[in-house]
Image (tube, rainbow, N blue to C red):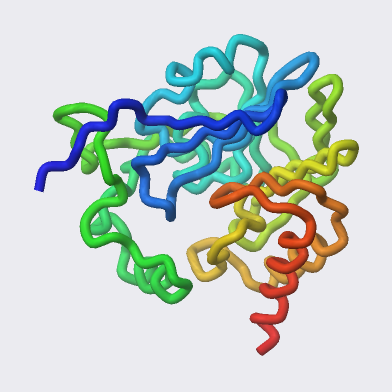
Length: 258
């Protein structure tokens, strides 16, 4: 069956005067990453960068006219695809080796995933589609079997407690392992904004994939219960507030104690 050609690859939504959400609507929800652009007084911040199938920088050129720091909350392929397009690239030190590992095939076909991963995803309610993780192609002649993820050196390694200062917004790096060893989130105390990556989101949390660790995730969730967040801007799915944040964390902890 012929697959349709997308008129545009990215969609966007202005959340407020400082914050814009971008996403790739033609990518399966499993790997449809939330891409966050934050406008600061002195500089801008990009949190995660999607799959890299099409140029993020070109598609949203109006957002990238000023100095920008691009942060990868972790280095799974759905979060770092367009990171190479930016000159300032930030990642946790534990994620840096995979980020620098060189170009490799982007898994866009169900056949690209090993059977144990397919089972792990199905077990948490995220079964892979029958053939492809794309519901449209960006252009005629596009072959999902031939797309590569470009490896890139980070320009800054961060750890717990480091800061990213935009002048009027100051983000603290929180190291929150569980989904991956070097997963980080960005916490802005003054506003209560929390850019959580895949540490917490309102969907099935993947703790049974390669690199994940339930014990670490439990420590992360206990910590998140104490964080006075107001608005959570996650790596996947919808924005949520403090009460839902607490519900998700508590549910995860309780589910692992059964």
